[in-house]
Structures are given as C-alpha cells and as structure tokens.
Length: 433
Ligand SMILES: NC(=O)c1ccc[n+]([C@@H]2O[C@H](COP(=O)([O-])OP(=O)(O)OC[C@H]3O[C@@H](n4cnc5c(N)ncnc54)[C@H](OP(=O)(O)O)[C@@H]3O)[C@@H](O)[C@H]2O)c1
Image 1: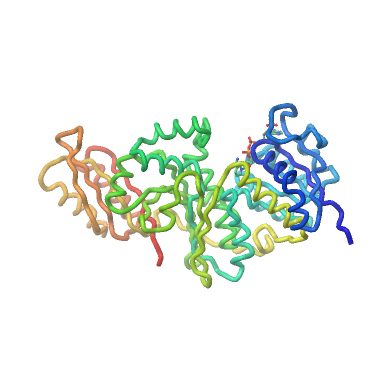
Image 2: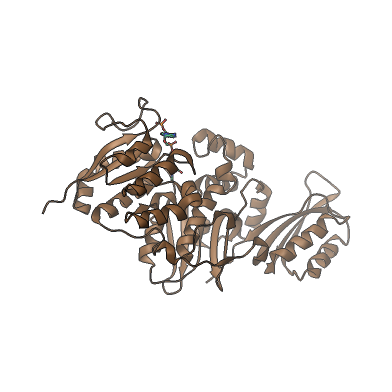
C-alpha cells in the first residue's frame, strides 16, 4: 500500500524556517526512504513575503496570517516564529485544537505554556514535538523520553547557551574582558544586539526548565529556576580559575534528591579534567546521569540554521512514521508534583574573590569569619593589587558548605573594616565519579 503524502505547513520563514525548507527540498528522497512517506509542504506563512531568503519559497502557497495555517489541510504545523506569547502561542493552540500535530523550536513558548499545550495535544490525540527547542541539533529530548526511559534520572546538566560559551571561551583564550568580547560576538552575529536573554542566562533557563520537567516527570515551572548570567564574570576570575585548575562556563543544572528538585542556571567553575571543560565556542553539551546507564554525554551544535532545522525535521519524520510520544514521555495528568529547593540550600564548593586591606592579620580575620559559619578553606592565594598599593586580592576556594552560610559570611566580610569592594563568588561544579 502506498502511504499518502504527509502534509506540512510552516510558520515563520526565518533562520530555522528556511533551514527546514532547505532540508525538506534537498533531502526529500532520503527522508521519504526513512519515513516511508513523501513530506509535502502545503503552505507557508511569515511576516514578510518578499525578502531575500536562501531557499526558493515561490513554489509554495503563501498564507498571510500564520494562525490560518491551523485551518489548512496540513497534518502538521511547524512553528518557527518564536516568542513566548503572541502569534506563536495562538497558532500552536489553534493547531492542536484542530487536531494537527505541532513541531516547534520555541523554548520560551514552552517554558511558559508547555503544560497547557502538552495537555491540549494529548486531549486531541496529536503530537507536540520540540527537539529543536533544547540544545539545537542535539537529540536530547529523544534520549530522555526514549533512550533513557528505563532510568530514573538523578541529575542533568550542561552548556545550554552557545553565546555565553563563546564569550567565556574567548575571554579565557584571549585574556579579554567581558564587554570587549560581547561586542565582538555581536559583530560576528553570535550575540543579539539586545543580549540579555542569552548573557542573563534566561535562554539557558528556558531549556533547563524543560529538561528538568522531562527528567523528573514534573510539570514545567520556570519560576522555580534560579537564573544568574555571566555579566559579573571578570577576566581576573577566569585567570584565577586556571591557577586552581578550573575553567568557567555557564551551566544549567537540575537534580532531584529525596523528591526535592533544584534547578538553576549559573556560571560555574569546572575542573579542567572534566569532559565538559573542553567544550568551547558555540557548542552545547548535555550530561545526563541515569540510575542504571550511568553518565551519558551528548555534545553538538546548539544553534544555527542547519543544526536546528535538522532537529525540527527529525520531529516531523517521527510523526510521519507514526511515532507518537507524549510531550513529557508520559501522560500530562500523571506528572509528579515535587517540591523545589532554594538556591541557598545548595551544598558545594565555592570560589571567593575579595579585595582587602594589605596588612598583617587580615587573612586570619577573614578565616575567623568563615569558620564562624562552619566554612573551611581548601586553598587560598593572596596577591598584591596591581593598581592599589594598600590593597590585596584574596582568592579562596572553600570546602563543601551550605550556600546560606556562605552568604552570611560574605555579608559579614563586606561590612568588616578590612574589606574594600563587595565580595564576589562563583559556584564550583560538584563532580560525581
Ligand atoms: N536560530 C537558531 O539557531 C535557533 C536555535 C534553536 C531554537 N530556535 C528557535 O526557533 C525559533 C525561530 O528562530 P529563528 O532564529 O529562525 O528566528 P528568525 O530568523 O527571527 O525567524 C523568525 C521568523 O518569524 C517571522 N515572524 C516574526 N514575527 C512574526 C509575526 N508576528 N507574524 C508572522 N511571522 C513572524 C519573521 O518573519 P519575516 O522574516 O518574514 O519578517 C522571521 O522570519 C525561535 O523560537 C527560536 O528560539 C532558533
């Protein structure tokens, strides 16, 4: 029996949308062999019809209003417009209500409306697939929902934002400061003109929130993700990190212990011996720790036209084949409601950077304040300040401690008579062997 064509409509003909069209055009035969069906683009829609694109769209039916695609004869709608609300949300909702499968690359939308859209997809017996929305070309959703289905996940973490990884890698390689590297990244197109979504950690946090929901079978809850960006990381921090055998990366990390979840995106110091430390430039990596399989590491391009479109087309191919996996890997009604830890409950090692008066007894005074909070010092380094003769820089690596205790100690140091500028700290990634 010859299967009929699988009909697709695409909304948002920008970077990713054009990539999807390009793959469906260039690899049409290959994808037909893979899925057993011809994938046919029946309609497209975007804001601007006539502008230069790297694919020929003249052969497709153009619909002015993207939401109207939900009323087309397509089996599946691809949403590559973006944005957490607005037209992307309206289109996805309407398409699912009209019993059309949806494939989206939009993590902001899912971080906000994912629970509701997942339920809507289930109620209408259609799929809502979103591989491209987390770590671009890396098949992490497939790995979690299918490949690791036998495992309880203890922890999932990784580099989820290529822009931040590029900036931190360049700061490390060139010894350059944050603002100079950000400017260069903007000129090269690796960072947006308004970079806050990336450098503030929010883009990574959208992805981490989705990963945590998949890993721990809980509803998506972006408000429970602690978010800290890379803006305060200095070139001195990076130099000091190297002296102690670390590099600095923006890490998204979610773990579940005794039914309590912690999910956070923060800059972290990582031992240079860890595989994740070697992931430079715009690459992404996701590490999953399962109770039976152990540690899985997936690395690849986390963004870009081809990589992201590759993930979108893989989702289309799955649905064309007749593979329907619920959004969370299980029914949305069966999700566990667990509790969440605050960032202050974190227990781990810390890097502390202080600027203090350069006089006898200061180190002892700092050590006393730390020890009052039960914080013991693993290593310490004191350097004369290059520009201020009466000041010294004090770099401290602590043993494992509670973040709440660290914050109390830093507050006391900040108000002490020997302190010069507000103390600064970076979390050190806890490595499990
Ligand atoms: N780029 C990546 O590497 C990447 C990676 C992973 C995930 N994503 C996600 O993929 C989605 C698309 O990203 P992108 O990089 O492809 O963005 P993009 O290049 O800006 O493309 C978005 C397209 O949507 C169209 N659009 C915007 N507002 C619209 C509206 N109100 N009505 C109709 N069309 C509208 C724009 O139309 P016109 O051009 O026609 O004016 C634009 O071409 C986002 O959710 C993003 O987070 C992107």
